[in-house]
Image (cartoon, rainbow, N blue to C red; front, side, top):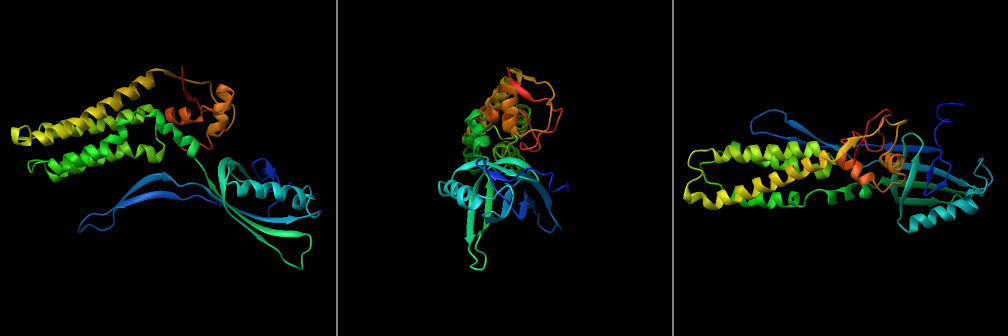
Length: 292
């Protein structure tokens, strides 16, 4: 068998289908910080984008084994799933199984070909279930950005612009954990500590504590209190976890949940506790942190 013939069968929602082409696109989110009168810029890596997958599907009857009845039986079932806009398991031969939904499906009939149709299918990875883990993070994370804006409006001239930039960067590092899925307790704790350190640096500035700056002091105290709360919550979570036995094979986050707990309902909390490079492909022999 050729390498391509050894790949997994393509399927969606448990319905397998033939394909003549399969394209997988993986992009990277990034932001380039540019500075006045400075060539180039500083690249900030923000994590990978959602997988985009496209299939060209020959939907014919009686021509491709083992899909001789695909056009009359499986295609109507597959199309019904598309019409319901359902998210389901998509098996991509080259990368494995992931949760996805169909964004586009095009059917083309050529009257010179009487055995069926040609399909173009586009899918987008759906990580909604993974990011429901946001509910496991203390709600004060959401409150920090407005607190920061409040402080910046009140910050006196005695606070250097560079110091305000450092505080803003520390807050952004903590808040953007939501966008990157980097929700492990130790990472949250470290980012929260960074915010606290910047707050303390501002407190130590000469004349900052004067009565005329009381509103700015109060606003900064709000930020620091929220960061301390987040750090304590992260520390509490870290203390109540332990490492599993090494994984027996490469797994997705949902497969890990099934292996550890017998079902897939714990995928979100595993994502919270582990800074996986790719939740869809956790290497063999990985020790996974889980709650006691």
